[in-house]
Length: 176
Image 1: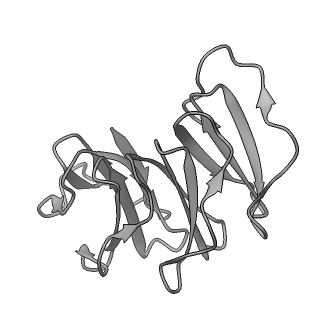
Image 2: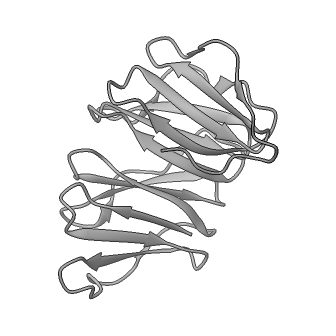
Image 3: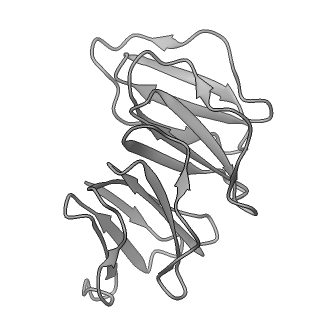
């Protein structure tokens, strides 16, 4: 249910309902080692850090797992902060922040040097959040929701920017 290419394009990661992450060589399309295991529910979101050193995964167990791409071993304990299904990740362009979204209608920002939450969760959507995207300069985070809105967030202070963007007649499931 989720795919992510590594920044160098040499690896494709896939996550699915079987609670595993599979890694694929893009030159041969053959599997890399055994599947990564650790989630208790299906995986719905994957994202590589901009430097390619970390893979973030999340899903139905409300846990964010981090994987060291040089060893494919888990980094520390899972990050906790959401109360429902993890639906989307986005790393800031400079790699200093990981944003996570959830069915619990919140966005969390994480400091990638400490893996600690930055401030309180961002609230503003009236339904589960389905997608996140950082602006190229990293100063704005966009979030899309089944509530049919796109919200923009100032990443320096976690505050909403203006009014929600409206126009879709059904929920929004992807941003780019």
